[in-house]
Image 1 (cartoon, rainbow, N blue to C red):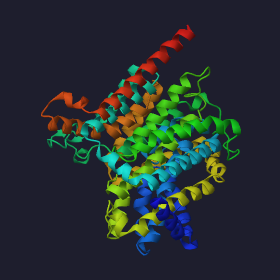
Image 2: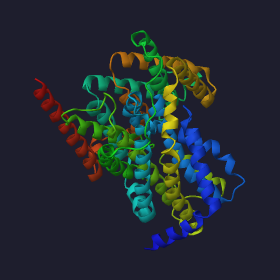
Image 3: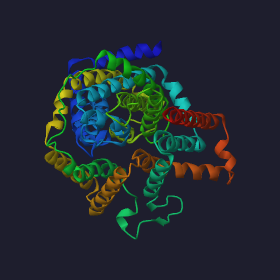
Image 4: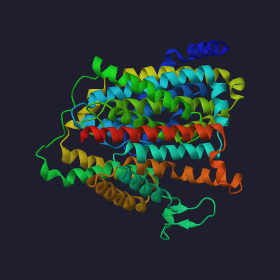
Length: 501
């Protein structure tokens, strides 16, 4: 009850006209920056950080609340419409969302994303407001063995369960892990697969891999098939910016499942929302495979958008809780928010609630307000965003290529990154031609370094004993859930093959 009283005081601060204006401006600017391919939500917070220098701390963080969630939704807009997610956390929702857009359901895909973001963020932020001490305690119970187990589950879920072919899925996973190994070994300092190029010492940027595989690879694939298509423009993207009753009923369970998957991950430092979004995508695809007429991989499944979007925002919500209560940034965006706190001489952690309680509860209250503003702002604009699909293919894909190149070069001003962008784009093109899934590559690139680090830490602590990977109830539960998922997936595939025979 004490938390509810503090939250009410926070709403009293956040609901003043000037602070509502800051939330609105933050959501608008966060979405606008997040929409630009190659930037994303983390970049939105970073770019807008200097804008708040002249504001008092409370107004600045209220504005950041809008930027925080606005940037996340902007990531999904470009993923759904242009197959170029602004951040890696929007990748999972892109697979089915872009198919929906290409089949004339772009507004519905964007509406599903917006409502999913609202649902996941609202429930997660409610839990943060009520149970921040419990979330902080849960985060501290995870050690290196638990983190390694989570990455293994993500690898298996995307390579063996989500992929239609286990062989192709494992091949894609191997490609991603190979890319992730490029650079200096953080443990020994040895150079790995750099060919003596200094620009590769820090590895290959996730931005380069994501934009190359998804954006440039898609452009090359569409260009190679141009002679087989007589369409001069993409499918009409106009339509209602809301969901029908049937679509809402179909998406609702996926929103709730995605939220349930995403909430725990925000409190543990696993690098962001990549794992929960891909896990949610895997769950929805597995459930879809049991239906008489599976929708995934065809014209776009609404549940393939609803689950990952709610999971991503649920993770973002509880990530803010972990940042406030532990001072632990569990994602790139949260890390930049930590820098924003330090800019004002504040250190997130348990003492923050005592030293700056008014600011913290006003920030939490503004997260609720930011979600509402985001929903009001983006649902009516869904058809407007979808008008991007009316641009003729040559101009649209030329624009995507231009933004991809400019965004990649702007990130590090490196010509080597541009060469890698082209090479990885060609790789993405070949993978599409041979029907090799992209998700395992992306998840391996993102989580490969984390898996390697936590594996080595586990072995160092246990003095080389491999039994440490299975020591502890949390680890056993994680692997148990993975084995159950594999068993269900294998049984489903055997049954489907028997039904088709």
